[in-house]
Image (cartoon, rainbow over all chains, first blue to last red; front, side, top):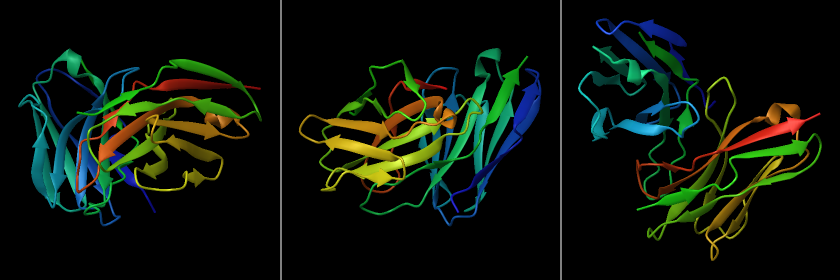
Length: 115
Length: 115
């Protein structure tokens, strides 16, 4: 089973709202990722968690706040977003294969619209 | 630094025909992995196939095969017996080996299968 789930599927929010995106995997993976994808572009990495610790932050604005409560869950808290933050937000997870190359498995994404 | 180049923004293929999607890469890492992902209009990034840089044989997964030519730094995806459901965006990607690593994506090729 290579399933990563994300909720909600769609989200519309105002610039003053606070909302959260949720990602879950039950594959025993120890790395989890958040990506942002604009239309007709490849995904852009935002954050990486490994063993529930933030390992990579790709200079993401503080209005995006990630959280990894346990090894299966990854949240992305959103506050005071801008219309240009409207995008598809993808979560992924990977095994952490030591010296080998990890394969990232993606969820279905959350389509976010900021009004 | 790593770079992935996909030179075909869009392609058409007749149903039941085979199609090759081109991907070239550049890296200074001695060990790396190459991936292909499929992204239908629904948004989910679906992992298709993986090739390790030291793998002697080309990877195959059902109707998908990866034509890996290390000296030419190419990793083309071959889809045999195209189906209407193969219509999607296809991303070539690569990552260095070892733990969690930043994945570099190409710009994608949009494949349309014609009945």
